[in-house]
Image (tube, rainbow, N blue to C red; front, side):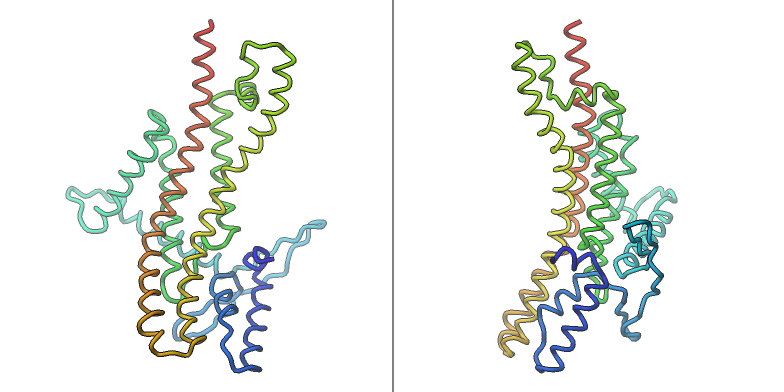
Length: 310
């Protein structure tokens, strides 16, 4: 139910209206409703000096039993802003400089680190073919994470639909790389875990293959699923903790709690969230590189075994 609310802006809007109505009737602040309003998606933007701005709403497209709603939401707008920032920043950085300094030096150090410490150990001589993908993933997630920490901003990576899409991209690259490295036959043989090449009787091989193939097949999806949930949960949890700490001021109605507990702890978690924004972008990129690298190397290892037998 919570996941449906986090993805459905219409449900979120109804929940916000219900929370506002409850405040009017009881005179009490709905902390839970306020938190959900902040972390969930909607068709509204909250802007300084302008207040709440309604986003355009388009009629849904119905294709059989499937409904497609192309109306922009605040998380979609945040992703547009991230894409625009990436274009602007790296268009400027693309201009060569003899002596890098400032932000140029900062971004260059990150790019070199991702290439040398994340991509190269997993891809070796094929690093250049994959480095652009991982740099795009890293900086997209990083900018989205940081944008959600700005006042009136929203964390697009706190939407499970966004993290699932990023995970699907890694999944598709992984499977394409595996098929390209191993061939179609080798790809499906890999699902057997090398059992077909083991020296044992046919009956035992058949039993092990029946067990191994479903396990390997499920494993293809558990890796991207873990990427999706990890990023979503970490980016959502930080905002919930910060808003909960601030909410203590209104729940306990205590100036002492606000000055000496809620505000200092919220500031500490906020600073920690800046670190988490970098960490989660790095973890997603690193694990994606490991998963794709494993798909490439497994094919090379099997070819090496076959060459030894011949």
